[in-house]
Length: 249
Image 1 (tube, helix red, strand yellow):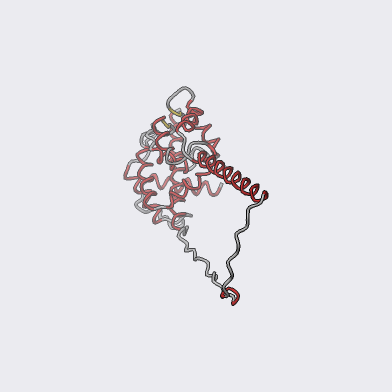
Image 2: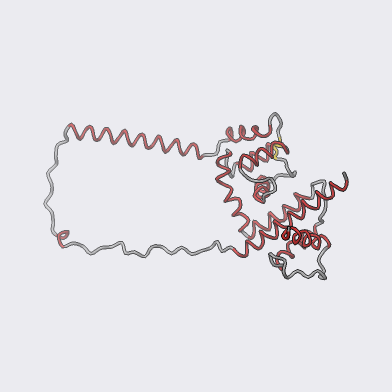
């Protein structure tokens, strides 16, 4: 059992290293600040000579029965549009009640979403539990324990995001894009260390965690420039060996 736990521990952290390494290189490769030039089509047209001729004032026309029906219909349509806009707006507004009900879908009778609830939650939003977007979500909720969301964390964090499964699915691209911001990336990276060290599997210390970031800054995504005789920690040597074996299999 001890050997199995150690293997799980190592593979889990090596998978994390692979994700971090890939994310860092993706950030450098992506250019998300494209300039969008406004349309340069001319909106103005030459004035028609006819427009310069003064038109005589029109006589007021008395409203007919058809005009009254048109006015009533216009008022009815306007009221309907306002009601529809109000309904759509109310659906977009964050609802604490809806968010609370959403939380208990996964927490059951508890005030915390545990591993089983988290598994169902990930399934419903369409991401794997180890997907990096879950780390970003945990950071947004300021979750203090890996694999758990408390009621307080859920309500406070989700208030800035959404209040339903469907809305969260629509927010996944936004959560991924947070990693493209250098400041947020550093905060999430720092959070990930404090977050992961609470696990019973304590493999990396803070120095090793910092070495991972330096490793990702200097080593190519395909690890082609990695020097096995370099002064990297043993953990990164193991990661490189694991990664290359994985690529060949």
